[in-house]
Image: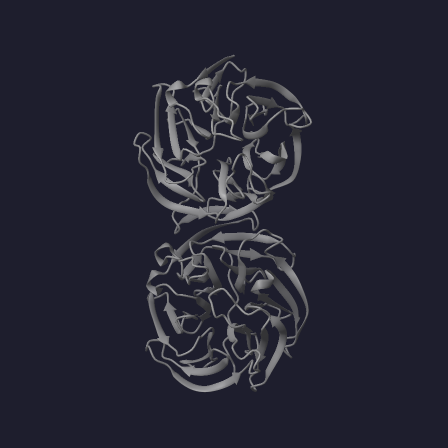
Length: 632
């Protein structure tokens, strides 16, 4: 065995994320605190680096696309273009953003999906906020899923050669954990520790990790001056230790033409006022030869980075092939608070509202035409009247009104007021929020409390109502914070409903003849499933699964109401405030999605990035149920 310090690269403050690229026979790695990406080519003994504006924690080449990489920049994952020589890079696209949490280690699995973890806050003197991090996967279609929560410092990750096991490190647990791994779906489960540093009396913390072709793990020991080799099939079995002159050993990667050279990154930043001297080896890049082992080729990223794409895949949940495409309908412009999408089969058009701009909107895909009309008050619902062209039921603050609109003119004619709710003095500042018609044509709608400042809503002031064809108003649920998504199953026995601040989707028994509901129960909790944001609008497909917009969550989710807490799919969108969903198109196999871009807590959202956009998703492999027009 021989050890060599690669002196040409100099010392890093926090060297991390080594990735050996077979195509260029080069090692890419980062300096997190130095905010640089680095390239080292052994054949020419050359080193180059480029500076970013924020911390960068990993760099992974894109598969089949020279000079393109997936990296982190602060809390974002971005695609960049870099020729490996220039000190400058070009940021091409932001793939996802993790709010205020700092991203740490990341790698691609054998399918090219990106796995990465977060730290609750940036570590200071090696300290992080307790259990605020998580482990995520960003799949080839841009959908993000959380796999492990309550993580302190997310670190080393790797997969075995036969793609059945996933190994993972949360440094402050001081263990290496093994999970069962499904290569097709990317799901992990049955997590268990296989090696404990404390049990084996090893000083330091486990950090980065790799695997060799024999299935043994090589683990960097931060603050431990060493790398250890362990056998994951024999719990608590250490095979050998490799000593280094650097205290903060951060990560490892196999490289070289035969993948038999072990590259090791280290750090030299100050912890607890201890100053480490780079001349002694701290912060250096090292390479070991003659270890008697070789590695497995590292996986490059295969992520499709444009928001509008088409990719063929097999969905393991449905066992059928489909093509999915997401498109922003730019002709529709951006809404402050787009809501209430309703697909009208007769006109083959989508009607929806902008609550804060007080407009009703019509979008016709066949002609890609968009028109809108202005009202004098907040409007949250627009539903065509059954068999009465150009007549609609809309809401105006607390009133249900009938209007006439030709779908082109910017003005409407108000015909009559059908009902007004929440007339009591304690709730007369409420407004109506979401609403839909049930299979009988009754209008169901809910109210919410006053919102004097965006995002600050009077709690538990709202109710859920229905209005029948005889003009009778019934109150079904009270003490509602924000009344939202409503839907009915195909056999008309279940009603699904959302009060957003309950963070759950609820199911009621439903009597189709009387319109009565009862036996309420929660069937899916965003909190229990570690989904950030609020549930908002909702629709149902012909298989009986629900599709729920996640406000402040950059996504919509598909759930199975017959299996409580069962998440089937999540679809990422470039809009943060995803508000509602509706099936449309001639075959009801296109999913339309509305969003908002209004300012909450001084966070300004840019329409140019997709916020407030109207989107359509095609090729999901399912279709919806026809929406019911009003029979009032």
